[in-house]
Image (cartoon, rainbow, N blue to C red; front, side, top):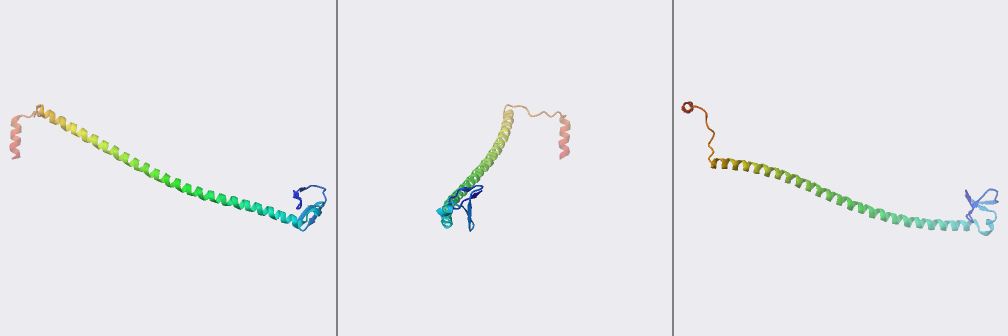
Length: 143
């Protein structure tokens, strides 16, 4: 679609137009506004739009910088929490190992206590079923 350089309205089929330089204008618009005025107005519009885009660009760059800093903070916090979690897992594993060791020591102490109690109650030592003569000769052979 072609737009008139002077009035900025679309040029439709069978309208009379004038081509001035690189600009196309309605035949009736040529007297109202010169092409250079239209170009000047268009240039001013473009400058305003450019200023608005540059302002938006600066704002977006500021947001990008802020978001990058926020991301870095979140990554640092994530690494810190991960390190704490790993440390907690190590402590938990050590605690489980200590509990297992304590349980083994407790069971060994209970066993030893049971043996001592059995001796104190006077349970006889295991009986040697061998004949005393055989035991005596065995001891003599060791000498």
